[in-house]
Length: 259
Image (cartoon, rainbow, N blue to C red; front, top):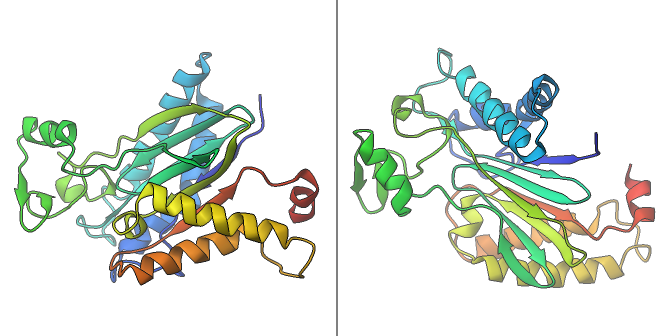
């Protein structure tokens, strides 16, 4: 047994989002996926920890996806990305389904923990085509001319090709780890990993120096997320934007005050 923290990227009501029932699926993932992960962890009898996490996360994603399979109130064309990060004292585990992205700042270097499920990925396009699907170029690549992602929770009208199986990666923690950025494609479509990390690192350092000086109720990472959001909007992002910043260098005294 070990302590972990789980962060799930949510496309929620206070973020820019698709103007229909898209939020129904994403809100469910944000509130329920962590519960499904916990249930699957307790249920699993596997001993090898990395294999256990892979099975647990895949099962949790499948259960979340199945919720919307026969739900009449949610159209078959509605879906969501799902990005989960599990952080322990020695590991960062990323499970991604869709085109949201997680990037680690380690000693100033931007290290992607996920790879977007876009249709310009040859392996994803080949998987879809081998199952009888088509990848059509209608200004951008889309599955059957509809969806620009190759994996998602929901989107059951395309489920034969748009699977809900997450790609899972493991990253051993380092003393040089500074922070994590989880963000939707509204950020990454207009800003590179390196641009986001450079901007976030500068803002985070400035905000850390102000801790104890001002009476702000918000932690430094909150200001970083707002700064990245502004930069994406200034770069004319026209897609949904959700951002989570995880400060991996938060001092123990400040962590205790926040709990």
